[in-house]
Structures are given as C-alpha cells and as structure tokens.
Length: 128
Image (tube, rainbow, N blue to C red):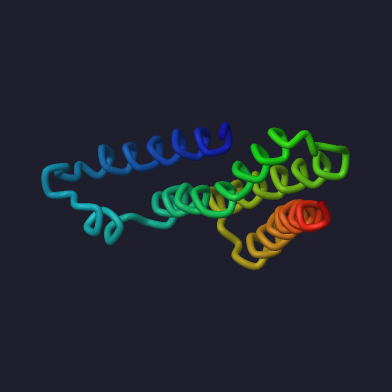
C-alpha cells in the first residue's frame, strides 16, 4: 500500500508540475485531453498507478486469507517479499524511464511470485 501511495504522490507531483509549468487551463482539461497532451514522463506514473490496482489487489486478498487462516510460513513470506521487491522495481522502471523489456521481466517475476502464493494456497485448501 505504501508503494501505491508513493506512486500516487509522484504522479500528482509530475502531473501538477506539467499543468502549471505549461499554463494549461484546468477548466478545459478533461481526462482524455490531459492524456493526449501529456508526455510519457507525466503519463507513465498515472499508468503505473492503474497497474497497482490490478495484481496487487490479488496479493492483498491472498495475504489476508493466509493470515486469517494461520497459514503464513517462511515460503509465503519469501514469495511475498519477492512479489513486493519486483513490483517496486517494476514501478520504478515504469515511472522513471519505462524500458519496456526490463519492465516486462520485472512484471513476470513479480507475477510468478504472486501466482506461486495463490496456487500453493489453493493446493493446501484442496488437500484439507
């Protein structure tokens, strides 16, 4: 959640700086118009914030499930940290220089850690 907050603050810092430095009329700024005129250094943080409401939501749900069912162990913790670290690196790449091949690799690694957690929890649940 802190990662989401950091990206949110960064997004608004970039967006507001762009709007004020270019003296854009905020009354005329619809979301689509802002997206049209924004350069990548302004739009990428916004796109990344949207990404943080995709797979991380699954992470929050599975983390709560594992906690509530007292299943948290070192395997889950290591995978969770892997998910977080690679997700944070993905956000840094997306927000600062957006090299898509690197961003994709970081995404795949973080998603792999998350799906490991989910599938392991499902196997445990099915074997009860």
